[in-house]
Image (cartoon, rainbow, N blue to C red; front, side, top):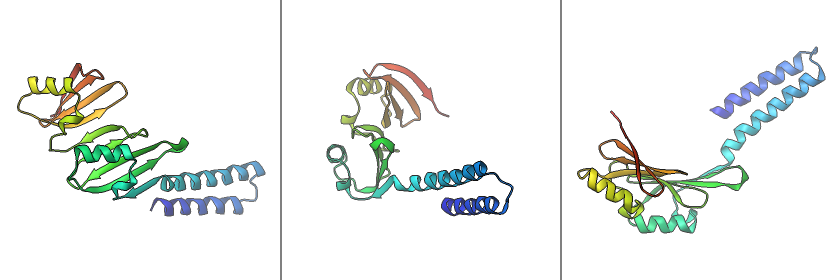
Length: 175
């Protein structure tokens, strides 16, 4: 759909360039460069993503992570997202709805188990201890590791923030 819209736009611009004799050479060059930029933008969006359902398409550290924490879960989809400068991220969606994101170093950045509990081994011990002590009747359903903090979502829609050492920093309650 997006590609066909670009083609129509390219045809309109080309028609304007060819039919308007009064356009100067620089304006024509500008339009041609605009057309090439539009084509490159559309094509680059398609060229860098790859989809699979085979665990073997993941790098070994990501496969080991899945084998350790989700050994029986079936893979629904693996999205290999190649960025410019050879950075590659992986998004894995399991059949049970769990979504795991890996960065270019194959370290997990996000584990979202929806309504299920995130495996205990993924959660740093200080965070597990804090949640168990202060929220005894809920479970951790999502954890994200950012560059300077952890964000944890509980089954009652409470979001907690911790620093990288696992020290509590804040709470946000969703309504």
